[in-house]
Image 1 (cartoon, rainbow, N blue to C red):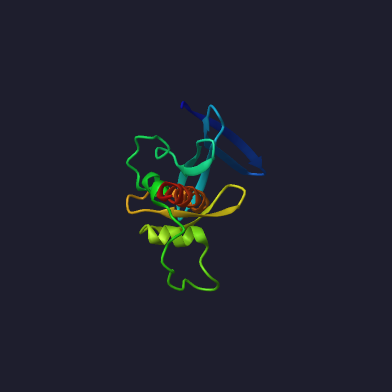
Image 2 (image 1 turned 90 degrees about the vertical axis):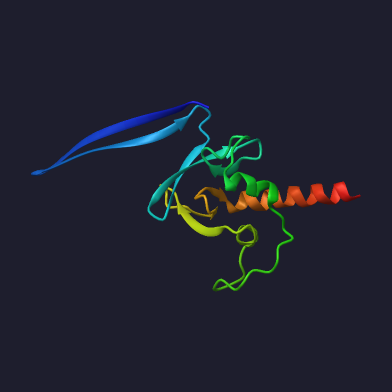
Amino acid sequence: MKVRILTSCFIFFAGNLLSVGCSSVYAFENGRVGTWTIGNKDVLFVLMGKENLMIELGCDRADSKCEARQALSQATLKTPPSPFLGVGAPSPGSRICLALKGGVVLGVDRQRNERTFCRFKDQTHVDNGALVYMAHLNDNRTQTESK
């Protein structure tokens, strides 16, 4: 997958004030990437496979050693009950994340949309929805193999 960095710059005059700035956007040939701010860090995510699983860029390769990538094959809905995390019950994605020894973090995109991700000790991330999707597939595969 080829990466292009598109940079746009602007000059803005308002009275006696002059503002100059540039911003860079990462673009992929297939347009399947997004930047989410987690904490104070911008993290690039790519949609992986035909399922469009959102995972951190670099972890989408089959030979990746990222904990986020490995978590997809380990995800299961058969997780122990999670400790109480606040108001309401934790979502299935959060429960799976915690069972895999990850931490649940909130990401915000440029349009101010919010999404939860699972962060692992190696600081890689995967979308909690991707964990739920893969947990269903993994659990169904396990049931089929045991018959």
